[in-house]
Image (cartoon, rainbow, N blue to C red):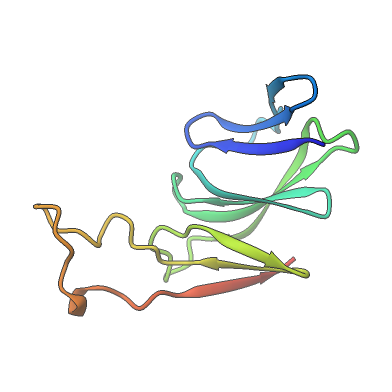
Length: 130
């Protein structure tokens, strides 16, 4: 059994619990894998929510046959006008459902108090066919 984990600042790792080994997953030079807030395995690829990059986006990282390297990054959704810190989701069948507007940076005022309900947005759940 292998585990794939995301470190928000460092990117993606593959963990082999039997060997007690963690290794960063190599990836194509033309992309960035930091800012991942939600990681899911589907059909030999990793689906990731990146809200720590600009533009915020949902990506699919295609793994090589051995699962120890990312061969290609595919952007599934980016810079949607309703995005406000997209975050966690779930895969059901071949559909990825995720929260498009967690409002992480805008729910509290400068004193750390919850903003009035009238200033908050209704949560949006988006879906992507995988």
